[in-house]
Amino acid sequence: MASNEPLVFLSCGGTIEKIYLPEAGRLGFDRSRIADWAERCRITAPWRAETVMLIDSLEMVDHDRQQLGRKIAQTPESRVIVLHGTDTMADSAKAVMLQRKEHQVIVFTGAMVPASFEKSDALFNFGFACAAVQFLQPGTYIAMNGKIFLADRAQKNIAAGRFEEPTPAPNAAH
Image 1 (cartoon, rainbow, N blue to C red):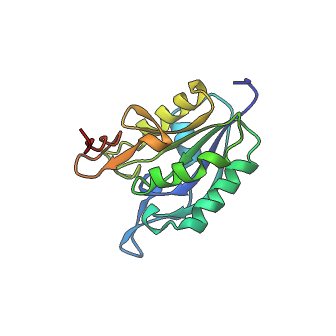
Image 2: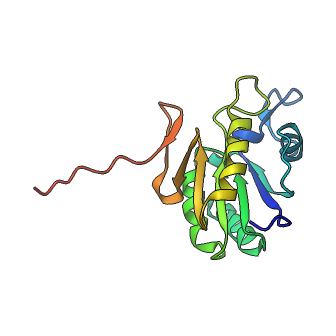
């Protein structure tokens, strides 16, 4: 990676960015926290951040994925980290795989528990994605739970609360 080329963070919202909104009595969004986390994690690589949308990934529709894909395609830098909700992260990662530029490394990450909660996995996943995006070959990946998955080889295991590779379907023909 060129030392002067920044890491690019694209925020889509998701659990990682949620906070408690007392006036509404629920979790939601008011702004992206990426700058706060970069400072807290002492990220020394140059970086910049953009908010693409702030929504729960269960509310994300094809139009939103197309918007994210266009944003990635318009991004000139080669190292892009997408903060995204975990429920549909794999769907979005697969949807934007073909829209990235040939030289780009796209790493999706998120959290099972909001960063604003004490026992969150958010900052670990954030830092892990920052490291991963600097060492991976061009492609689209998901970095969660200390593991890196190819975008089309990851799924959320809701019961276990983690990402994993899909279990191959048993071969019916013997």
